[in-house]
Image 1 (tube, one colour):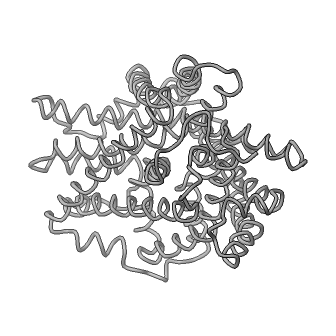
Image 2 (cartoon, one colour; image 1 turned 90 degrees about the vertical axis):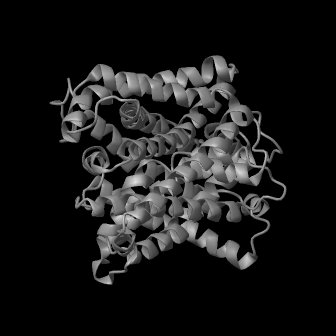
Image 3 (tube, rainbow, N blue to C red; image 1 turned 45 degrees about the vertical axis):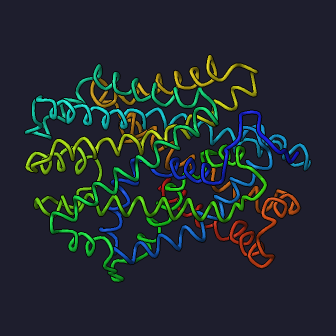
Length: 453
């Protein structure tokens, strides 16, 4: 079954895969969630725990996803279908691909709504630069946005359009061209924001806030948070890395090396985001513990308004968030699109990408309405958007990751694994397989049970 190329196209180089996979991993959560979690859970001590979790949980499953994809060269569902057919194993394992694709569609449906907020704020700051009104009351501005289903739908639709335009063009003309531009743009924006943070005079405090190790904060809950962050940060369990792995060249490309490069780049971006955000937060006396939307959409705009170049900084900052969201959304839509092309033989540009994007957009309307018209609707004490997030993020992704670890560690033929990891020393290969068979499943199961409870 091992194929040389994918019918969907191939990455032109190892660097393109690293940029694409990093783009998939780097998202809105990296920009605000990781810095906040770091500062609130022991600073540098949390970073070390997080890196340990990447090594023992994240990387083993990442290697597994990429090697499965590269071996099969098809969408996750058809790759797994071929693997179980060739090995005579139960067809039930194909469910891993279905879990990943459905989870990706559900996540993209609400992720696009939140990404639309970043486009809206970037537009507000662009208008301000052109002489428009200032954001003098960020709380009211944010509340007004959430209360308007029409405005939310417009920005949600615009973001989905940006996503489908890339995916519809295929691997070389779409995905590769996009990441070739978007990932360098993300780094330039991020470094520009960090450079401004240095001028505030609070970079030292921000660095201490982020990196000063406080081992007294480290307990079982912190380990669980670090493990969950490591798992979700690498986009594991949704088969995005499996799909991107299908387009990865065989010759001259080491899966462990590119996997480690993706993990380190992803972590670097998250830490740089903290170095960009926290000097501003601290210099204006804002609460750095206010992670999430409260910090991004209501607290930070207060600081931007007081800055001499606040409109420029605001535009750059929300532009950065939009780019991070865009690179992640592309990877969420690609697995379903690839399957549609294979299943029905339809043209990617005309039907496959548009149909899947249309489905995500329609499902996203549930999240839009849950913020206003249907705000009183509760499912297990969550609004509709929160319930979809629970099902996809907290349950389906860990379940998918758990099954990928078990399938690769216990079901896949050792010969297949060794062929894909031929450059890995025997002792390291055995250690990886042991982590995949025993350690990673147990730890992911703990995260899954914690989510259920």
